[in-house]
Length: 329
Image (cartoon, rainbow, N blue to C red; front, side):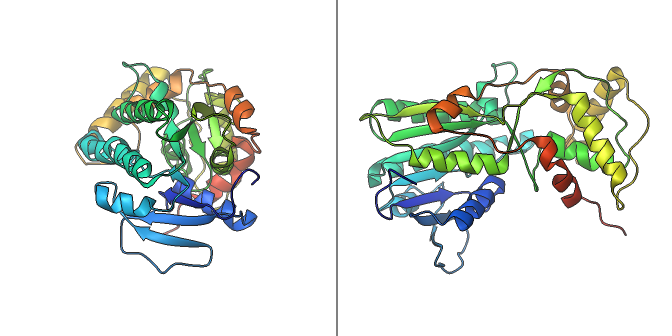
């Protein structure tokens, strides 16, 4: 952790989430020379030798300023994702408004750096993005403006779909449906996507927090991937093959679904979820994700942060699937 002063304090939001938990595991393993302060909205557990806790809410500016006092670096992970349209307004109050409030609090408290975990959805075009992606993009632009104005150093990490034990999203939904024998084999889609392991995201966050300052201003935005381009039908095949080898799950369906039927099934699943009849995590956006390329370049992250991915989706897939085994009645 070269380049850090003795025992600087880092404030981490979203420490109990998917990425936050991986970040804390990394700290527990590496024991860096920093003091951690975890921001929590609910009633807190006692502090530990490893880190302190502070109660604050992204909707309360006063509590945020208090949480940022004495902090050198803010690592902002807290956010609301994987929500339906009915929850978009609530998500915006966290993903956009809350991020801007935290930025203002960090500046007011004299923090040196703000590290923000964003999403590749922020790079999507207007017609292809989601309310979540729009909010992430708006937050990015405000942060970059603050960095360029020398109010605070800013490093934005745009992560593509993140995999690992406990993952959520479209691939996790696909695994659950295949395990239960509910999802026929996908058409042989040849489009490619980028992914990133959760532990590599944690390493990149630490690298961003530790990056030496080379000038009075720092406003950096890079994209995180594991450097691989994954073919959709190969992901489907790998999931099905591993599920076959497990003892608790059902055998995957041997049927291969025509593309037109997959489109119809995704549309029906979206309607059922809107009506609150059945929640599968599948929608028309899932279909679009399965049929379009979504590949990103991680060269800038590797060069700027010294980032080197350590794993691939296929290396982690057995552990991911095993952790998602459906329980027997």
